[in-house]
Image: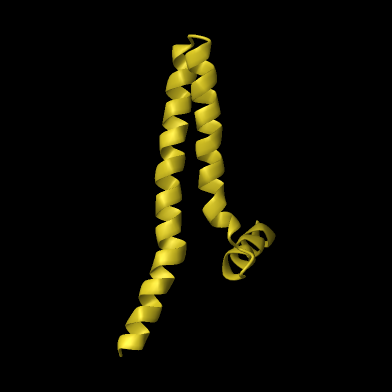
Length: 82
C-alpha cells in the first residue's frame, strides 16, 4: 500500500503527473458511453448509472483541475504580491 501511495505522490508532484487531471475526464467519458448504450437499448438502469457516472466525472474533473492547477497559480500570485 505504501508503494502505491509513493507512486501516486510521485506522479502528482512531477511535471509528468498530469494524469490526475485526465482520470476524471476518462470516468466522464465512460459514463457518457454507458449512458448512450442505456438510452439506445431502452435500459433505464444503464442510462441512470451512466448519467450518474458522467456527472461524477464532470464534477470530479472540475474539482481536480481547480485543486491541482488553480491553487498553484493562486499561490504563485500571492507570493508575487508580497
